[in-house]
Length: 101
Image (cartoon, rainbow, N blue to C red; front, side):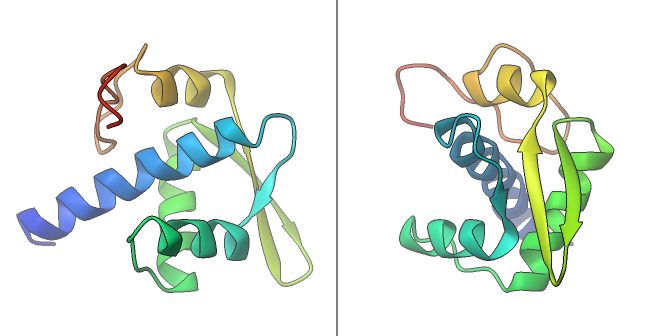
């Protein structure tokens, strides 16, 4: 993947964590996340969103549960910390509190 592609993926991963954090106790499926990302200007296919969710699960920031054709994601404690900028994980853009990033 190019440097540009890596940056986009890293940003999308942070946005996914932040969306899950804002959802609170409600887990979100990959289709809802895809729509939310699109509304933020991040254009991804369903398969790209699933691939990013797989990465986030590998690094311990989300848990995934297949429900029929959907993949449901729920934030872990580590995911909360990354979304808030309290922890850094390789491959996920670091959130800087107060910057909107």
